Image (cartoon, rainbow, N blue to C red; front, top):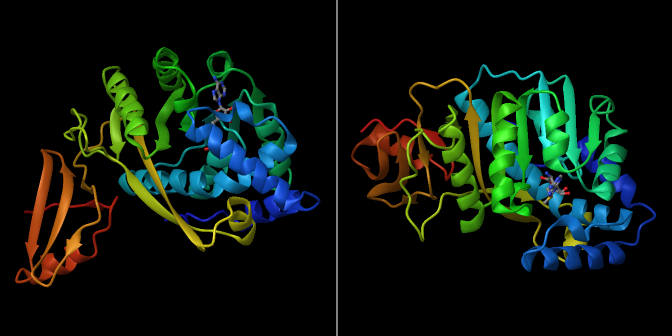
Length: 325
Ligand SMILES: C[S@@+](CC[C@H](N)C(=O)[O-])C[C@H]1O[C@@H](n2cnc3c(N)ncnc32)[C@H](O)[C@@H]1O
């Protein structure tokens, strides 16, 4: 399992860029960019070097943690998956590329694309300190036109990206990303009902084109959750001093809620169930909400079933588990 916290090399590169910048300026810009996001805007508000750095300091640790958690889930289901090439769509400061490089030592070629000059410049700057990522190919351009020109990759990732484009554009982009996917496509979004709805729409569209779900779902059928419920997960990450300062936060950690889907070209037999919320543990039983190959299940594992109870006690929200009832 790869750690959800930023690798030391990236932390050092970010800290290095922060030298010479006022942390107060970065905090002000980060607050203003966050407000734009909350008001439904996108990363168009990120225009300058300070904006890009403020965004990266405030958000990169959390999006990195969400992508890493999704890649860990994928690697658990497909332990033999060893991609050689990566395509990071809407790569911004390069977050998903860093996460994939950590999760898959097999990766040798890294291609990225994004429309935002300031984020692209920051990504290249951060990569320049890394032996492994120094030689990336980062195209500047609109996702669809840049993707059309890109080569296929074993692993394609779009992290916190599809929410920034319109619904019709999302459909076309989903299909284009799938065309460029040699093996696996991972799409990660914020863990909100809207983020989940985007993931579910893309999932359905691409399953109709022959994709199979590797994670989180244990099946390729319709999602069994009904509104107001939605499928999402949470990942805890540590906050560095700079991260706390830029966010004006006190707590040394934060919990990032995210939704994701990893789609593959090959069908995976016997997929485990997925824990959909933090199980409740009492002295009498463990009750858990699972998504199983046969649909949604609320399981109760009584204490008297000693071995099963001990196993269920260790279940955490987001885990893949064998449901042997
Ligand atoms: C919220 S940021 C996420 C960046 C990065 N993937 C991450 O996880 O940190 C969204 C990114 O998508 C890019 N983006 C949005 N719409 C785009 C489009 N139509 N073409 C190319 N890039 C786009 C933005 O420029 C921005 O870098």
